[in-house]
Length: 344
Ligand code: SAH
Image (cartoon, rainbow, N blue to C red):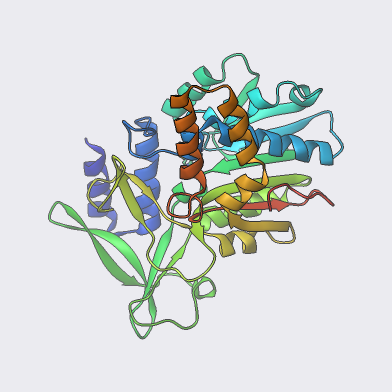
């Protein structure tokens, strides 16, 4: 049975499903059946654009470890590491820091078997452990965790105000085709919904994101850094599907297109509880603050003219306002006392 038939069957048996359930199933199938990155794939992420991205994040983690007093052991975790490129670049950039690699216990949180294989190859020679969910990360030592374009892949539910009341958007079937529908609220979740809205307004809620952030920040001695596209206020329907670097209809090909939504950074902040919050700032602000310009200049010194052009192009893609510079934001959450993460 094809994956689409599998979803059709579930709708036949159980009725229309909420958008979060639909998205969770689609994203699970998508990452478990392909490597979607790069020019031949569906989209390109920052670590795949330039080695500088992972190098600077490696330096960021190392700086925090030093500020924290260089603990002898700590968990260096990454959620959704894709091809493992960020971690490989980060480890290379920090290899010469005395004691740092010895202290770092590297853990990758990855649900996709296909991508885990890529990570195993990319990180050969390093001592790395894998798990499929954050609950499995060791909690008996300090932890620094990174997540680039991880939160956007977690399922989001959508609510629509019809002028009188909020209802939930669902996915049903019209013949063989998937279609959106609208049902009255089945559970008491008014607390997460805005009190006032205009007729037709869409509100998104990503319970899985809230839960992951909450769980992470309930651990002692933890700092996390998330980088993603998103907003801090005022949004509507941000669910999107990408295929071969272009936007497509989200209902067209579940499981075969990259389904994501923009991250609500205000919600991330709220879920952080009592933890200290840094940012969100734009990706351009963050990377420039970490010395992206200087790093690019260093690489250019040993580069051919062609490589020099590539470095300049990467710099532009990562920081220009019309590229990733402004849409992408960076937030750090920490309950390690008295630390000042770089870049904010
Ligand atoms: N950070 C990488 C990849 C981003 S794509 C980069 O920047 O290139 C999203 C990644 O998150 C993939 O590795 C995907 O398999 C993983 N992922 C998505 N949902 C997940 C979940 N619920 N649990 C664990 N990993 C997940």
